Image (cartoon, helix red, strand yellow):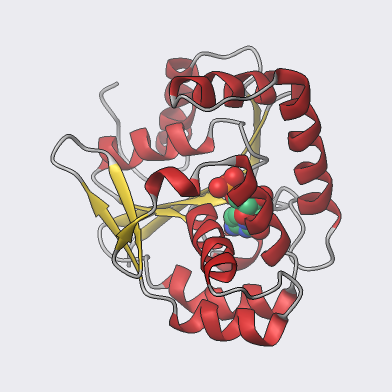
Length: 229
Ligand code: DC
């Protein structure tokens, strides 16, 4: 049985960074479920499917041709219909499309099995919004990462600037706020911590401090006898 660790929370809380580091450290697989919703948003845009056309979105979700690859320097690459869309996927426009297609319950259901197939030995780090509540309710360890809106927008700002995107901080705060609102208030699997999740506010913590806390939790939960940090 693969060991499953879920890391949920709003955008910019540090889930991606921590999940990737943790997967590498433990030698586990990694599921970036947000990437699936982003790829679906992009596929919908490319095939001119409206974000409220649930029937067509379900067909796309079930059949879209997607691939994740790891490059020789350890970076993750995403391919949609054979095309490298890694950069297009990370824009705020795609994030908003993802959040819109993700708001329909039956579209989410169409992606459920695809996500669960990532759970293979020795284990999986599952990063998203509903990993601990819906996709892997029996996960061995559930973490819910948060940070203040300002801190999360600031992190996104730095990340996008580094990627050469032209962004404004106040506009990002607004985008983060409206995406939070849509993700948290939707009827279908809203973003909430699982009842048995450990909540961690990362606003004042360094990446290493978050990593150390999560690694300690895996030991406390009895998943490993000890981990040499
Ligand atoms: O984690 P992210 O920023 O890449 O996610 C993009 C959007 O996808 C997010 O705003 C909501 C949606 N999403 C979701 O509904 N459920 C998930 N498990 C992951 C992402």
